[in-house]
Image 1 (cartoon, rainbow, N blue to C red):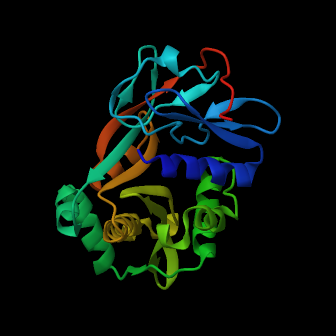
Image 2: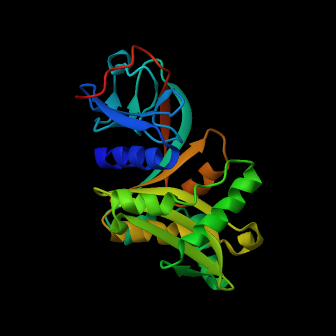
Length: 261
C-alpha cells in the first residue's frame, strides 16, 4: 500500500472536512491519522486505510498505539481486529490479463452495454460524476458528495493521477467511476449510476473502462474499494474481476502518540 496514496487521502480529507492530519512511525509502517476539528481521531475516516508502508501479514496492535481506531490495509491482520468490510482487488500486467479476470457474467454485461448503444467518455465534465453520485446518495439515504472532491484530488495527487470515466446512454451520463493511480496502485474511489438505465448495464462498461484506463496509466493492482459484509455490490465487484480480501479494523488502544517533530 503506497504511503503516498494514504497520506494523499489524508490531505484530501483534511482540505474538505477541516482539522489536521499527521503520520507517526510505528516500526512496521506509518500510522496516518486525521484529527477532527471538534476532537476525535481516526486512521483514517470514510473507509480509507490508516496504516501505510506495511508489508502484508500480522501486526501487533498494541505496538501501533495511536489512541484511535485504525482501518488496516488489505492483507494485514492483527489479534483483536474485527472484520468490518470486504475489499476486492484485480491484479494484472495488462488489459488482456485484466479482461481474463472478469467472470463470464461481467464480460457479458460489458458486451450488452456496448450492444445497447452505451459508449465510454473519458473526457466528461466533473458535473457528470457529481450528478450521478448525488442521485446515489439520495437513494441510499447517505450524505451528499462534496462538490470539490475531484478538484481536490487533482490538486493533491496531480491531474495525471486522477481519472473520471463515464458510460453514456442516449448521450446522457448513465454510470461513472472516479479513479486514481499512485505508484502503480489503482483505486476506484467512487462509482454511481442512473437507475433509469440499469437495463443497459452501463455500470459494467464504466467499471471495465475505468480499470482499463488505470492499467494503461501504470496500475498493476486495482482496488475496488470497500463493501460492507453482505452487501450486494460485493458480488458485482467479483463479476468485474475483483477478488475478495477481508478488511479489518482495530479499536482504539494505547495513548495518543505525539506527532513527529
